[in-house]
Length: 188
Picture (cartoon, one colour):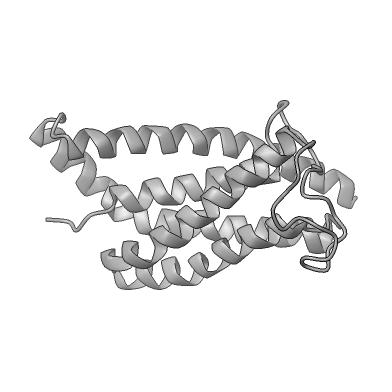
């Protein structure tokens, strides 16, 4: 039963990862268009006013889903976390609390605290993902003694659609949080 639930969850998360990656790219394009003043004032006011209302709560939901699913994979499905999985968790788990409080208080200054954590987590997940793609390299801090884990950082518990693994899901989660935080601005 757990295996079936894990397979269903993995399929749902893989599709969500594709959607999240696409939304992230869209939000980053909008952010850069806004910064370079290549977007009309009317579009900017309408779109950014509406997206700002949901950006902090959305970032919190992404962080919460990431935390809950990582705990499901390790504690229920039995996927032991490697060293870099733990580093990614160290970057993601505090974001649940930070973004939750910021959402509740409408604190748009949270970017100062949340962006560095999300960027560090994204960089770790990029490095981890490339380790899985090119496993014949030596990994920084990925030995059997580093975190007490004997799981290799180059291995993958699953590979959906031929490229989506847990580090790629983490990368997309961090990228989506970064995109939502960048697009967040005070409602004027």
